[in-house]
Image (cartoon, rainbow, N blue to C red; front, top):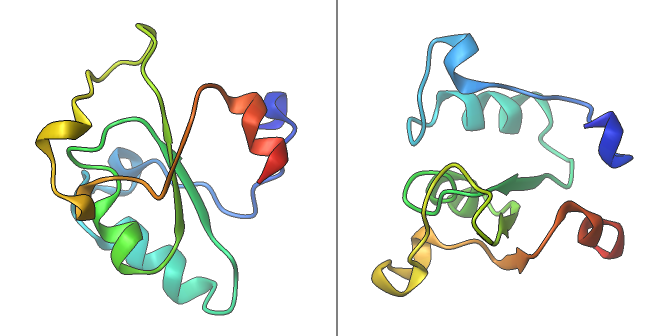
Length: 97
């Protein structure tokens, strides 16, 4: 995160706290610990990454797959609740948000 020039207040890796996405425990923990914060969630897998953050009203940002992402993407096959509110081509675009 620091390499991106982003100073996170909280960073969770779901597997490290005994949870896997789309299970809500990591998302709910962040929301409970920071009830009045603007939370921005960046991820790359619309199949499992954005459902709960969207329900919580977070700003969800998807990293467009240009062949580098771990997870393949086909947003046209998914309901809106699975999709991020914004798409970016690379992390450099976070500066403008």
